[in-house]
Image 1: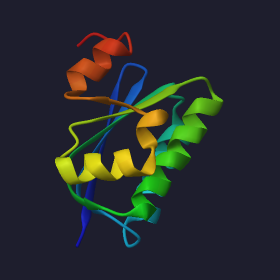
Image 2: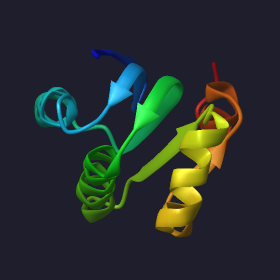
Image 3: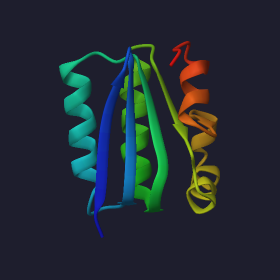
Image 4: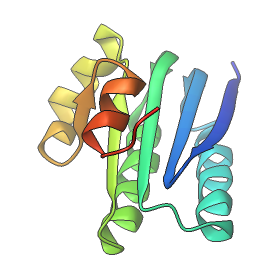
Length: 117
């Protein structure tokens, strides 16, 4: 399968919308695209909108964990939103919710990060 990555800047927040499957076939490309954007512009906050994901494996969790560590090193915040039940279950089982907050909608995450629409 494939994965579509949409990157959108909203003030000091990078919004990443993923659609498709985030697995060992697509993880490196997602990592590269997000890191390239983070290298070009300093975003203290990242919102990962996973509402379009149909599948994610441990490689996808690794991508998210790596971006979390990178953002956290600069005192930023990485959050996720719009998780479908199977993806949410993977986050619960892996313990990701201990370090990453979840929101129902992008707007809720932006508001909590102090950014208005």
